[in-house]
Amino acid sequence: MQIFFSSLHALDQYSFSLDNLPQGDACQHCAAANQWVSHGYVYKQRSMMKREVVGKRLLCGKRYGKQGCGR
Figure (cartoon, rainbow, N blue to C red):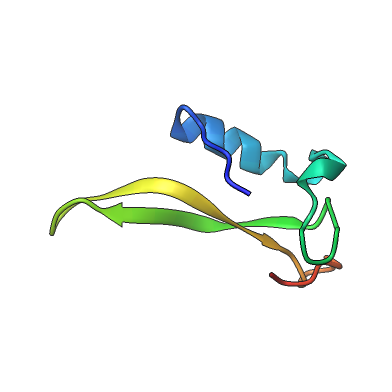
């Protein structure tokens, strides 16, 4: 599932509301919709000294009391 955001702030707001996502945003492997965990950013290397945030990793949580599949 790919969702595009207009800014890094909008992306962060979405990832902060992971426990309240609709059932349509459920994990495609285990169908859990409330087990998402934010797992850092995805970067694109622009030059030797500069990298840019282009996305965020979201995992279906299996640790810390979450009942997801871990994918």
